[in-house]
Structures are given as structure tokens and as C-alpha cells.
Length: 152
Image (cartoon, rainbow, N blue to C red; front, side, top):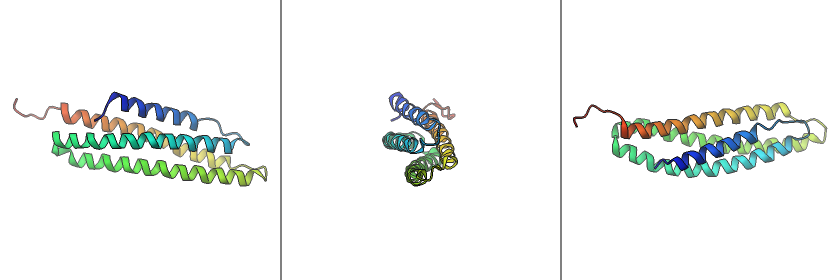
């Protein structure tokens, strides 16, 4: 079931993830940024996974209430799965970037441009994930409270 508590947990973790990601990437600090973002990805993943499990109950309730929304539920499940896969991929990319920063910092050159691209991708993911969670919440409410033209 979708609850205000779950919604606030997701909002909080995404806000913290965004704040961590927005820390400026200054030459010489790339490794620190990568480590910080990787930790935030792990924390975000734990919460998103927990919320995904809660959404499975919500999807079941939506289908019980309005089987006509089965295509929408399939779509939302797919978007959520894809979102989790992208988040896991960001962890790998961040760890790879950290290794690259360590390797190149010996030559006094740091791939800050690459880190900025990664940051942009992560921020896009955060925005998309916020919108997805709002969409899920909207369809949950829609399943129970919309007017279907049924006699009553």
C-alpha cells in the first residue's frame, strides 16, 4: 500500500542523493566525490528497493479494484524495474570513475568532464524517478477514486 511515510522516505532519500550529487567536482576532489556519490547510490538503492516491494502490493490492489488498468500497471512495473537497473548501473559507473580518478591523479590530470557527464546522468535519473513515483501515486489514487460511470 502506498503511504505518506513511504512517499516521504523516497522524497528524503532522493533529496539527499541530489544534494550529494550536486557537490561541486573540483580538480583534486574527484575521488572524494565518487566515494560520496557511491555511498548515496547504495542508500538510495536500499530505499527504492523497499518502496518497489511496497508498490507490488499497491499494484495488486489497483488490479483488484480496476482490472482495466492492467496495461498501466505493467508499464509502471517496467519503468520501476528499469529505474532500479539504471541506479545499479550508476554504482558501477561511479566506481569505475573513482578507479579512473585514482589512476589519472598520479599524472595530475583528473577526468572532471567525465564526472560532470555522470553527474548530469544521475541528476536526470533523480528527476525521472521523482516523476515516476508521482505517477505511481496518481494511478493508485485514480484506481480507487475516479468516476467510472457505474450506477450507484
